[in-house]
Length: 123
Image 1 (cartoon, rainbow, N blue to C red):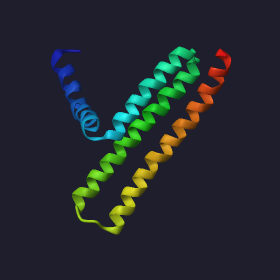
Image 2 (cartoon, rainbow, N blue to C red):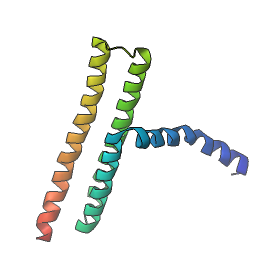
Image 3 (spheres, helix red, strand yellow):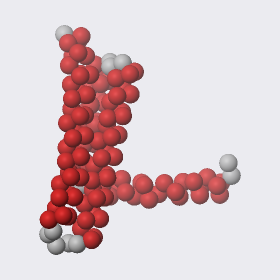
Image 4 (cartoon, rainbow, N blue to C red):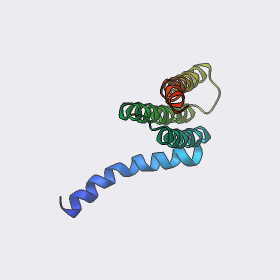
């Protein structure tokens, strides 16, 4: 691929990278989720989890990050539509937050399914 085409392809991901940087800078919960993900990777490495377990960890971690990004986008859109408190906007924001919570709970359950047996094998 020629340099110009490669630069054109890379320029398409710049907005995505900017969005991730914004999430990191502005969203405390995203930073907590990334820190948790780093801990999970370290523990998974220490416990020697299987390839299939790594796939599950990576997928669920990505789903948690993506859900948080979508929730943040939804909140930003709601705030743009009306900065005033509105019952429908509040409901929409709550639903987005609920989606993030459900994904977080799912991640914890999957983590327990993977890590409890791995810990038991080590003991």
